[in-house]
Length: 453
Image (cartoon, rainbow, N blue to C red; front, top):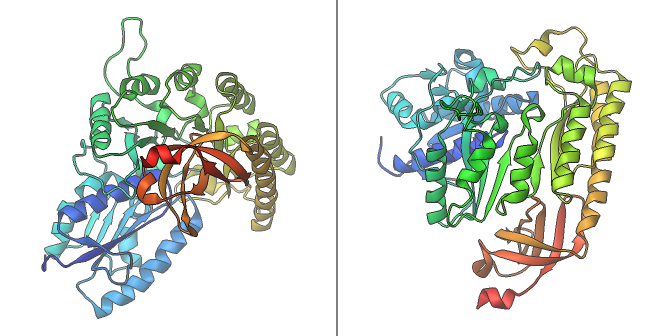
């Protein structure tokens, strides 16, 4: 490598798993002696960590790549990398489309970045998309925050939802051992991190692939068992987790969340559709009645829990009546937050080949109507915070108002309040909420003097 002054830039698209992968790859590049730059046009190594869930994310990657490919004609030493799910799905086809690329690597290869780059610096064009066993990862992620961190607990997904490319690009489920997860959390606690989000594409499947079960025949490694196992890690004040699948979401897990004080009262449980026939066509493996029972159980144990979810409108064949059932579900449950998307066909998925695709106009219209309802319900749900005292973990200064700091409540609601970030960063502060908005809160801190002292 030419000197230590080389700079790198990573642009991340898509889910939290990708953010976690990007942090790991940044950690590797730091170790290799490169330095981070915010400007991709100053960087000698440019990495796009890609997402293939929605079509526009993929198109965005191609437009960014085109600009960098032109730059490479003037600067042949520029190294261009595409990582993540588009890389896994497209593989060598990407090289045909963008011959200026140096490295195409699937998400399972994130921790091999140094080896792969060394092959590139030796003059090779490299494609790494073959299946690998996940090696236990010892690279230290370059965390974007010093307060909150992601910890992967299970890679891959064995579900076969008909709209989704994740199993094809992220591989089969592979759980990390409880000991490895706890060791990573202990290290984070020593480094001063206060909050950990445990991540998995389908986190409730955790442990099914690990050997060993108890005498009563129950598997000893469930996600619930893992929560009990890591709950008392010193220094970690809060634990979150995502993403849950309704098919595997158990009352035992909900009870654990109610019993364990560090586990935040926030559940992200995608439902995708409120209509049973659509759910069946999606191969989701549950009914809307089962989903509603899960939510009822959550609210029985944790009446105030924050609920977020994902929903898809305009799935092939969805009728207006079926769409209305999704609207009814959203209206009845009143989510704190809902990620919505119009269905977009992904290559290599069954639903992409079906002939009953809906027009873009119908999809856009349904998405707009759903989003309007989501905003209305979120505003209603927010009202419950007015005048209450919420615990906020301070993460940063408010970029729009430097006299304020910001962080999240236990229910994952963004909250702002007056304060000095130098004194408050990483502190858990009780805040009396004075202003509510659909997706964020403002308040006044209680006992700041005590914290400052």
